[in-house]
Each structure stands twice: as C-alpha cells, then as structure tokens.
Length: 274
Image 1 (cartoon, rainbow, N blue to C red):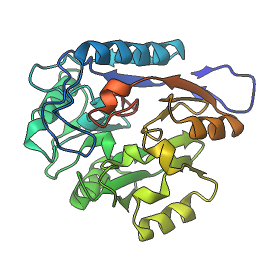
Image 2: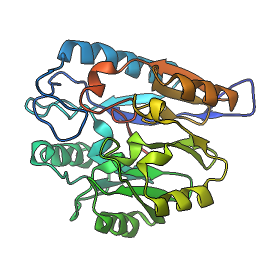
Image 3: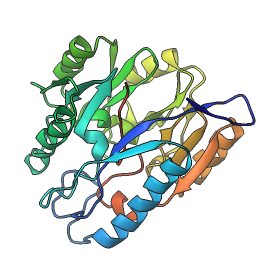
Image 4: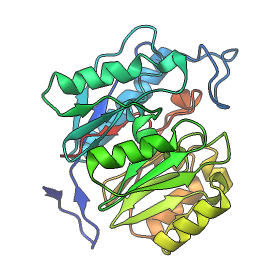
C-alpha cells in the first residue's frame, strides 16, 4: 500500500511498535548523553512521544504498543528491543544490566502474537545496531553489539549483514549515526565511523546524504524515513534543508526530553517488517 504523493518519491506504509514512556527517567549513566544529576520529566517525555506517535499515524502508518514496565526507564527506546525482518524476530541481548530485562519483554510480546522468534546468544541491541535496507542489513559494532551477533542474525534471517565499526561513544548505536532514506540509499555522519567502515559506506552509497557534526549532535540522524517522509529531530536544521533539497518531505518533531537519555525518533520506533 502506498500513500499518493505529488512527485517521484513514494511513501510505503509501515507498521511500528512503540512503548509509552510512563516510567522514563535518567537514573543511571550508560552513554555520554545521560546525566542522572540533571534528571528528566516523564510527563514531558510522554507529551513529546505522543506527538511522535501522532506524526506516524498522520502519515498513514500503523502503530502498535507494548506495555511499559516500571523500573525499565529506557524501554521507550523500542528500536533496541528486537530486529524484525520478513516476519521473523531476532531478539535483543543488552550490553548493560540496567536494560537486560527489556530483551525478554519485547521477545514475549512477539511470541504471544505468533511471530517466529530467536533468542540471541550474543550481545546485540536490535535495530539500534541493525539497519535493514532492501537487500542487505547494515550492522554496527564498537560499543553495544558483538560482531558474532551479526553472523547470528544473518544465519537466522537469511539476509547479507555488513559490519560497520563505530568509534565515537556519542554515537554508541548505528541508528544515531546513519538512517535509511529509501531506494537503497542512506544518510550518515562520517565522524562516527572507522576509516575502513567509511570506505565501505562510500563504496556502497556513493550518493549518500552526508550530515555534519552539528546535526549529528542533536541526533538528527536518529530519523525514520518511509521513502518520502522523514520524521526527524527539529533541531537538525542543516540536515532538514539538505533532505528537502533532495526531494524528501521533512516532518520535524521535538524529542528533547528523550534526548537526555540519548534517544530520538528512531530509538522510539521498532519497525515490524513482514
């Protein structure tokens, strides 16, 4: 199913899983964005999350919800909970004990709905470090996901997986530094990647949209594209202008509260690909 649009780009409708941040807070520090001393407002996070959900629904996308669990303040970052490709679910195994219970919670949600699932034997944080394109899966490593998980995912899902190494701790997940535009292309911030990984990206995506550091530092690359519309943090001004020039419809959202934990639109959004 497609949403009719006036130019050559076409938006395909998606199915997203999200988790309302009722118990959100910054109570520990597991990435450079987090500072428990500054705290965070669950009420503000919920308001901003609701606006993100509404943005998806206004674009014609389906949004399902998993119940939040008290004591798991980062469960709102649904992208980290699993990887779903061709209706098969590869579960997450979190690197930090503070988030360990999220993996089983998300896997249980899919199991109870009849999806074929695989419990991961190796550390990985779902779509945080796995980015699915039409034919391949880009997979991040360096901070949260073991390269062994890349091979485990490839064996289970039957899709080629290409490893990319992250080197800047501010961009601790692949989805903080790169997102899929559609039509086999991506946008990324070069400073997040090793030299070898940059060569791979340049070879695979010679026409990629390149983001600058200022836009990367407001998590502008933690965005969600449906092939035409791109839901993106509003503060990423330069990247928004660039994407518009490339013919995309930019849908800015404000997720400043969730950014206190290092999250943006994509972090809140797990795509269910059938």
